[in-house]
Length: 120
Length: 107
Image 1 (cartoon, one colour):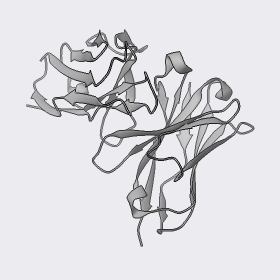
Image 2: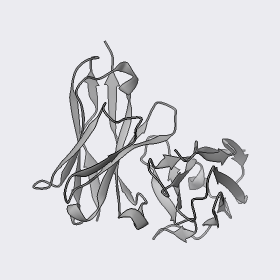
Image 3: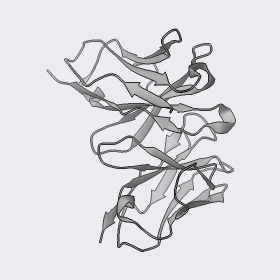
């Protein structure tokens, strides 16, 4: 069974750094891209960007580029989303999701979500 | 960015109803359009990919149609478990973008 399991909820202060994770299992981790999707409270879905675990090639949504970074550790089949300086506006639910290549760019498996709360 | 306009933003329906949601792109995206269902407190779930292909395990009462700029998503016989929010999602170009969502509520 394909699974993406995300790290637990986080409560942080503005200016702090944070890394959340997404561990894949039940499939060959390097065969699928991992995307990150933000959902602010009561709002819709926003694609933040994606990473190819084969070579760590990334595509970022310009709206998020420079504020977050994505990485992977293929030795433990895990993808990461990182912030160096959080803002209150980063408070949201963050999902990881896997997709195939350019011609199969649908999210067929999702993590359970990581709730990030940023407050002073 | 490709803008996806989804309508309606919400609708009320009864068990057994036929429900249709539309999604319009502001440029031609061929058939590069997916539909997801999200229930409160849960991750989204893929229902339809490539505009009209039903994901494995998804009931046949769900269907998708359309191409270019105009797409539709239909639930033919609404069931209690179908009350949720539905999103369209284009993958023709980066950044990938979603529609604003349609909340299907109990009438």
